[in-house]
Image (cartoon, rainbow, N blue to C red; front, side, top):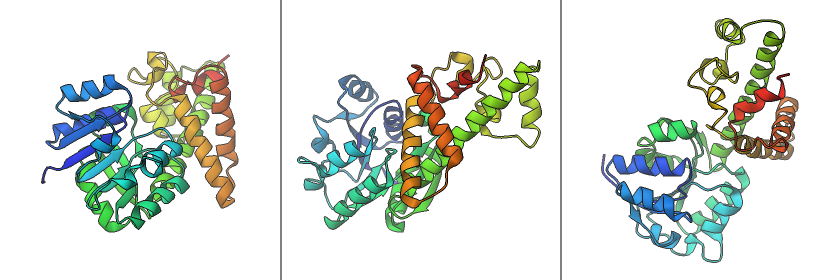
Length: 296
């Protein structure tokens, strides 16, 4: 595969490891983040440190952004000093942020009017997946843009899906995370009921994993401390994927449900539970800490 010039904006818990994997793959990577420490860390791994977002996006084949919310993505590309004014028409923009689908569509439409290709490509797999290069990318955009994006996404992930047009990646991501929150809450509830009735949670987990209650949280991310050594629950709920981020995704899911008039009673309940967990001060803990809501 040919090596590309890549710009990467947003070097947080996910973006930093993702950019590092692009460097490992042999691409020329320019990076920018408001946190200079993260820029310096990537520079020590071989990245070029850009002075600002505009410089980071200058003359790159692909520009990747990984930002907290839709307002940040719109400001980066469409704001007063937005990159829409300076991006080359040959640059493909890949936004890996998890944001509302409408923001992704607005950015994609505005860039398209300037002849610039765009895909939304939110990720699943957490910090561990970002570090290991095993992320799942859920991509929205046209086929040509998806094919070009795929040439670099394979250097950061293991599973790459084309979900549909621009915005489809975001919709698929929040559907997945809404389901994940429901599974985590339900698994926590069932395990605690077993504990309250005298069962060993490890034995109960093994039983349910081999039975019809089997699910991802039981297999790979058990929320009960001490059951699964590798899970955040056994490490004082150190994330992982923070409660605050799950709450954000559930908020996006509830907005999408409202706009599409979708019935989401289970999602609404999970949204309330994670809001309660935030109010109890657990926002920076792993989302599996919802187990604590059910414990006596």
